[in-house]
Amino acid sequence: MMRLRVAALLFAVPLAALAATFEQEKAFVAAYRSAFEAKDAKAFESLLYTKGADPQALGFYRMMMTEGMGSKISSIALEPLTDADRADAAKAMPAPGGRTLRLTLVPVRKLVIKRTGKDASGSSSSTSRVYVAEDGGRLVIPVPGPAK
Image (cartoon, rainbow, N blue to C red):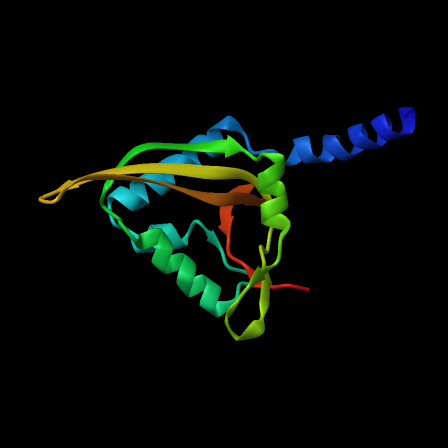
């Protein structure tokens, strides 16, 4: 039992050393909000981690991230991952053509975005979530690549 605790502690220390600072998290959230509300697709793309990304997955991410750009973000926050999130992020994803994809980086947080909108037909609200990882001390949104 003691060995298990020591192993868990040794595993957790390097993860804590890689954790983004509060300032980095705040800057990432601000950059996302700013890009979304300004309809700035180029700024959005700078938040994506595309190394090793599948081209079709990248196109899908670009499309999904820019959908609804300019609408009002009622809340946006980086949240800790749950055990279910970690399991979901580790899963292989089916892709067109029978291929299998996996996230290219291991997520450390999830970005939860709540949007509201009003038009002639009424009001609407939606919530979306996207995994966030670290790359060289920078927070990024990992795009899936071929599973290995």
